[in-house]
Length: 282
Image (tube, rainbow, N blue to C red):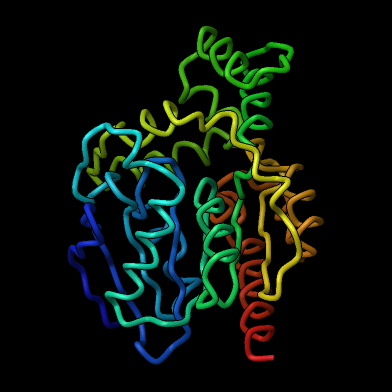
């Protein structure tokens, strides 16, 4: 299989990029979660499912294996991530493409859909669209009753438990799934900086609720979510309803449904991508 790995400058950032698959196949740009994180776990988990496509995996600015940036909130905005993605597509000579976005990456995908006609469609995988809603779920995971203010919910939850412990409770329906994910992540040896998460926190991320911007568009969107993903479901149902997008709920799966229910997830992913591609051709 064709595989090109390297660093591509985009404005003040330099992105680590893995461009794999047939150059003549439909193009998928993969937006990982975070803020922060990296694309390694997505390529490891989704690579076999996405073999019919040309897939571009990349670590977002200041994240993972990409060039580290100063902890300046002005460098870490939704606008900056959108612009990076467009500049990356331009550098690769890709004019039209679909997006596959996981978790936080859904925000970037939705903004790209809204602004850029070259995006033919998007698959939102376990999308994070309302951070106030997510903050309330973290409070519940800490055994608290959610408060009206999202930053208060976050602060109170973190006084009760470490962030990883809270997210683990919401993301992983079984200890086996959590251990398998951690085995993949630890095996990567990637220790990205905390800069993106810290900068987005200073920018008021936990007050960001994108729900009011959700509306049907001319380009297709599909949603795939784990039934037991406490960071996204059941709120993903409202996301799909507002977008008038089909939603595929994977029974028994969490935030990484390819780990928990690989066969059911594969079927859901295949159906969602086939629908996106058919709608684009139509």
